[in-house]
Length: 146
Picture 1 (cartoon, rainbow, N blue to C red):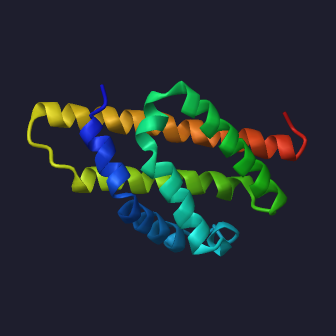
Picture 2: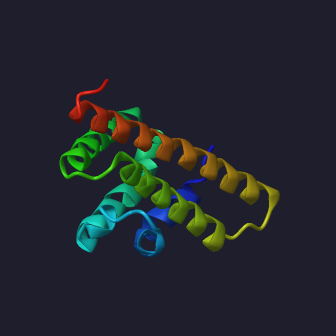
């Protein structure tokens, strides 16, 4: 079971993770289209995703809603002329920022804490993989491939 305490830490510190993400995004080469997005849009995306992380991780209903949203994001990125590789890399960078925060900020005092952190990292990996899948699916739908 994923620790609710760790999930709440991420939800409560979404702004710090967003800052990490923006630094990663700005320092990454080959993301010219994505780096042109307004910072306010990027920050709002981070807030929406991370502030509600607990409900996304535990509810299939929210998973369906999130899948539909990321398919729309994929379609929007296609219509905006963003290469698929850049759209996918952006989600990977968000995952990296979230996991880096988890590793840097969480107190691991016991074996149970370590297990909870590892379980959270596993669940976050699956979560972000699902976002990538839905983003690519929406992108392909927009460009006429299925």
